Image (cartoon, rainbow, N blue to C red; front, side, top):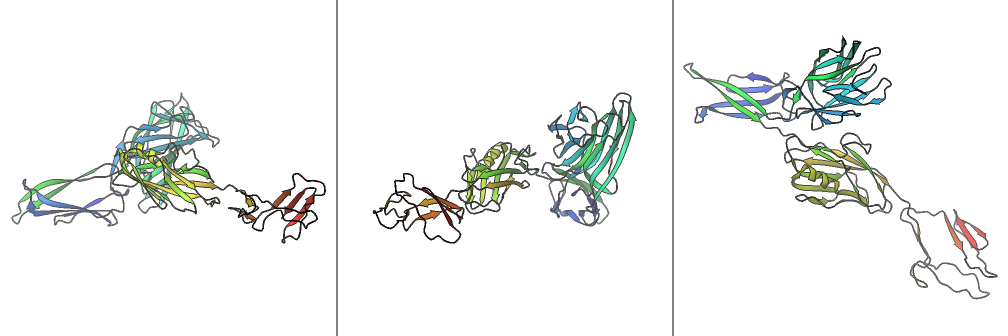
Length: 475
């Protein structure tokens, strides 16, 4: 099986066996060399994998499942072998989300049974996050009491040999609580299906379902290819034998930055918020999850800030033993063979912050990939929303402190003299996140008899109001 398509064997009769698809696409080639033999007189052989653009696997079947997560909650995740995950969700007759219930291997909606109008949705995926490839299902349906029921099913996403999506459907009816087997096959030219809906139509009695056998393509186990050969000499004498080729497959690790999607992000992604001048925030949620069906360790993780703005900083806190960090520009690389749990902790230790007092509010995008030494995970993405905080303007009435320290000013007025400015010639106003002001208020706090605050000529756009001992500049 190559990406869901059957691999055909073609014997060229010259010591070469070809594995190819029905359209002629070459997958592998095995060649024997009778001129070179081992100690048991078996000929030497070579095996070449000619196509690495897809996945080579086998059709497998499972008669049991394990509950990965859920049970009487909105999403029930079931594992079939180590190569297929079935995520089940449901709605009731009003279209509202309903719980998916698992009881003694039977599945119900909102309880132990389907009620009329209930719908169950199955979405299949493999451990790497790619769509699962189901090739058939045998199930049981059991009614409640002696009432007649009807079960409708629809394959809502199946893929044919041309990559097209096809759909098809069927139904099964029964009366009472006897177990009735039914099958969901491949149809309409489908090679496999990835999504299935089961529903109880209006007027149906209650029922529940159970899995008997589920068949699917398995890309997560080593492949054994026993290849037979027959050698014929010039006299017509023959000798037969077999050589076994084993293809070692490596399942990539699976990363989820927010396993329960509590941040509002879907899939393997995470969403969070950074506020200007705040402490650095982690690029992963507290429930970051890394799984790998054939490895307990990772060797590296790469965290990339894809759209860094001025002042942005990726930093790394304390790391578990065995993991080191390198920060180059906007890329953090974590390295070292260590457990999945340790890498979860290490990824949480990577933080984002900004030193800018006027940070861009463009949402930052951080991509995260982990590697088990042989394969990368799919990319998980953290979206960081940035909130800018308005910074107050800074006023200094005497910038060079020629008269007073700090932001202050000191001057002298002589009786009967002309009015004097309340600021030095080097008065300074700065604002890190604004080029304009809207007002200024000048207050004489301890006015004495005869004291006057007055305003001279003003720049265009600024007006003055003098009320008592307070001058307000506006505009």
